[in-house]
Amino acid sequence: MSTLTGLNSKPRLAAELCAVTRMLEDMGILQYSGHIAVRVPGQDALMVQRRSDSRAELVPERIVTVDFDGNVIDGDGKPPSETAIHIETMRARPDVHATLHSHMELAIAFTMMEDAQMYPMRARATRWASGIPTHPDPSHIKYPQQGKDLAATLAHHNVALMRAHGLLLVAESLPALISDAVHFEENAKAQMQVMNAGAKPKPLTAAEIEQILKLDDRPHHVSKMWNYYVRKGLVAGTVEKEWDLLEG
Image 1 (cartoon, rainbow, N blue to C red):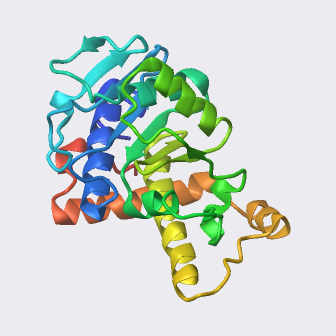
Image 2 (image 1 turned 90 degrees about the vertical axis):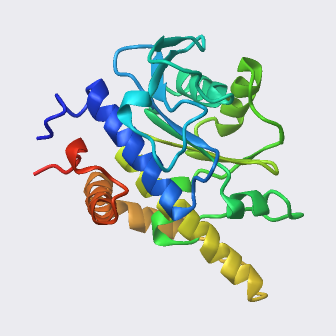
Image 3 (image 1 turned 90 degrees about the horizontal axis):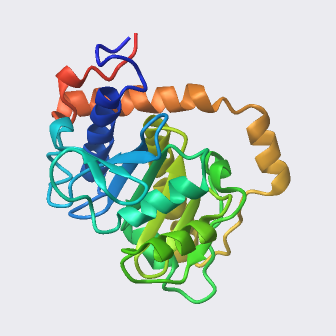
């Protein structure tokens, strides 16, 4: 068990938030902008980085807690200007505990092509079998109503593209979020490779998705991915050893 007073404690979640942010920045899924938020258990509040801090150097001491009215209730500094994305998504989706807003280049590319729908192509893309909608607002999502409109586009799905802007990806935890972010980019690359080859994309069928899901063990896979990327981050120095993020 981690020494950070429990898996759902604020210190543990802050450390996970920093680790996932740093790891996704290292992969290029996050860069100079974009951000991740995590729900504070038992509160209408979330934890997110300060808008002025580098994604590559994020530390738990600089994380802020923001209530669902957008007020900073713990920590110093201002949250990202697009915090409404995270607030309104979590307000609309009680099942969502971690959110990613990224400017992933491949995701943006799919919103800038006529009649180019992204599909679940690879086996790990069953997470998006319900659909990958595109939100029509290409501007910064700064205001509550904009956040509500994006949450409405997301609806019951687990990702939404944002026209000429990026994406919103949601999950049940921060470890699950990094797993999904990796697989989402893999899936986007696979479809783009097919299209670049001049072939028609052949997405997973409903029967194939059902077959995959029958044998799927999401908690095990999330744990496997978390162990791999945290250990890789420890070796590279992306993850701090004192965060103690490995179980067992």
